[in-house]
Length: 213
Image 1 (cartoon, rainbow, N blue to C red):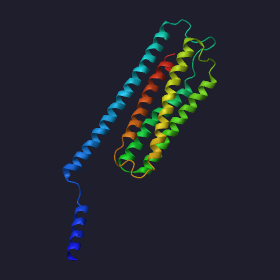
Image 2: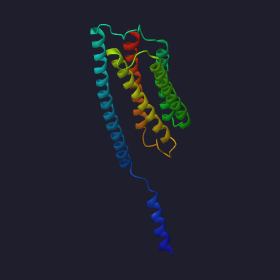
Image 3: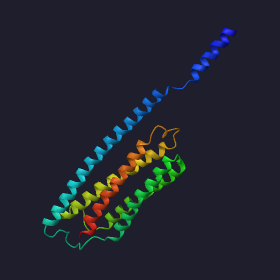
Image 4: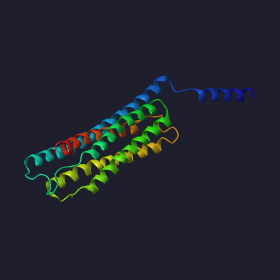
């Protein structure tokens, strides 16, 4: 009886022991290395996307400065008021998504969800505003070089905004799963970085297309 009690006590003691500090440190370092490698790969992806957009920008500038009768017939210029409002909304969403990140960093999931959802709403408003603008324009994709480049640039950027909203939706759903962000926040950080990238690209587009007419 005493022997069985001693064995039980020994097993309990072994089960209650924690991993040695060295093992915990190795596991933590491994997680950090994985997150660092993932973020590096994502940054490389954004750099490749930047090259694509820069080539589009260079083509737009080249065509604009060398094409006679740049604007389609009957078009005097683009309305700037609504695109400017869209720009303010999209740029402001970068600050909102940063606030959401801070809430998650401080382990406040409800604050994270609120500001994350607000970011998604602002991005959706931007896409809605762009769709309304497209419907009101008096030219199409085949209306000369300007029409083609305008729809190509704004459409390609709009596709990135839509992709960003999809990523945000996935991250929001993950926040409702148990213990999902305790091991790291790479998904949220990468999505936020992608959103900042989309905002910077739009600022350049806005200047090229709407300000420089």
